[in-house]
Image (cartoon, rainbow, N blue to C red; front, side):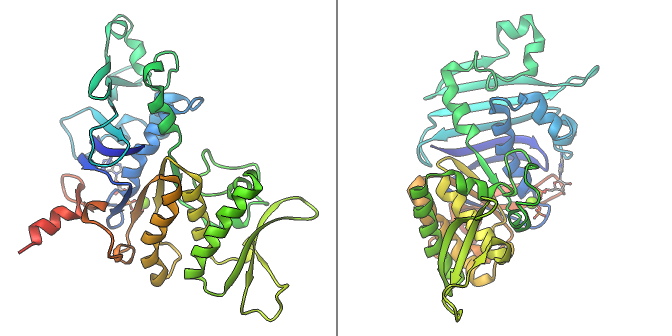
Length: 357
Ligand SMILES: Nc1ncnc2c1ncn2[C@@H]1O[C@H](COP(=O)(O)OP(=O)(O)OP(=O)(O)O)[C@@H](O)[C@H]1O
Ligand SMILES: [Mg+2]
């Protein structure tokens, strides 16, 4: 399943978002245009849905409260709202729709509370809050139904789907120094600190097959690469990746991940994540540390990697080079244009239409 539409109001630097989403979606904009803020909507929903994640109150608090989330350009409207449509493919009616609106208590603890929460299944409204129970006990509106397994049985599929959303903003140094910083992995590991452990934890045959695919893809970027393997340190048992290059005199010579280049490490992490996931993968600026030639290959690589698992990939980027692939459709690119009244989000196909003779 994929998220095929996102509707939001007053989220960070966006007053309004209403866009359809494809299986491969690029989110393009200059610095501070809101690319990370847009991806954060999906992390926000994922974190609410987490089984032991602390729910709605925690995810708002993690973002320093409703007043920091609410769009500063929207002075009159106190409410933030989000709606997602979940379906098998783009451009079809949603199997599931989930929507919530929230604001902040006007006084006292200033907790975040829901103004509404709704779920539709196949177009039929199956949850509509506030309901009678909420009216009797308004404190209930400090929690979403999504985070309460007792109340979400009818739509537990949405929670399951959202919990699998993966966010990746890989920092090569964290992979390189994994041994030194072991045990201090940030929640959900967005920066790839536990990447080698993840590689180590899958069945050896799955690991071999994934590394083979990655090795094949990496040869585009690093043609001298001959072999990419998984090994364990003989003394410590710690997991490592090892590469062998064809241009070296000795075929016995190898490099481990601490000697890989930043670009190569980011590519390995990124490709592995795509092979590992069958849900939504959020990739932050995958072009970092890669040369332009490789960046232009990223879009086809992403397609090739996600073909097996059918995950949806939402990619934030500042790079025009990433979008040079002929096969990218105008609807696969969302353009973020900052303005006085907040950032406007539109598919690039809308601009093409305007420019067409
Ligand atoms: N509640 C809010 N209302 C209005 N603007 C906000 C709000 N919260 C954050 N911003 C603005 O959003 C911008 C940051 O957006 P974000 O980090 O998503 O940009 P980005 O496109 O990812 O940039 P980069 O390419 O540098 O990573 C900042 O200018 C910040 O001031
Ligand atoms: Mg950003």
